[in-house]
Image 1 (cartoon, rainbow over the protein chains, first blue to last red):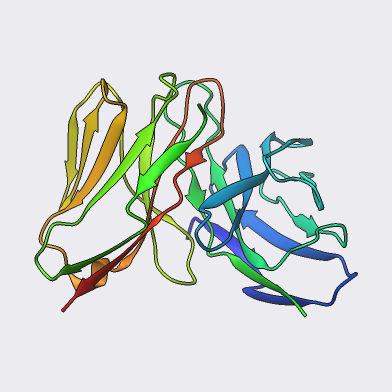
Image 2 (image 1 turned 120 degrees about the vertical axis):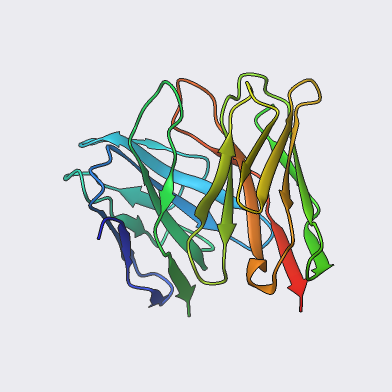
Length: 115
Length: 112
């Protein structure tokens, strides 16, 4: 089955710890994205990557880091510098066309809770 | 100019009713407008999308109406069912960028 997988589904973190959220896709998509979702605020872009070994900050990148060493993988690290990390994190991917439509497809999400 | 304003925040309709969710934008460079459906604890799934060269698009019971001059677009759900109860997000993007601008979402509840 083609798709996007995220793991774990639920994650608990103690204050001061870094945690890494996994995102893998087998859609052969070039572009990948990380969003944060909080109630009543929609989806906010954390980081995105257009191609392997390249990524750009989104609207709320502070306290987060990413890597893109492989086309199919785009892990997100939530660092201790992120002051309010409790949220639902969504990974997405798209073909990566700058011209024309480029539909984003989402994974099932990871719910992170800081204890 | 980068915002997409979505309303209402929440909506309750009876089974068979036609809920309407509205979105408005300012940036006339936007050229792709998708709608996503999200069930609790799940990732959003693409429902239907439209480009500004058409005024209406239908897929099953879901219809997008697009008013380019007013810079508004709406989602209509015909013959709504309890299984349509979910949160709906509109979004917009423009050429030359991968970024989507999302609305804040509408929580729909369809009563049996």
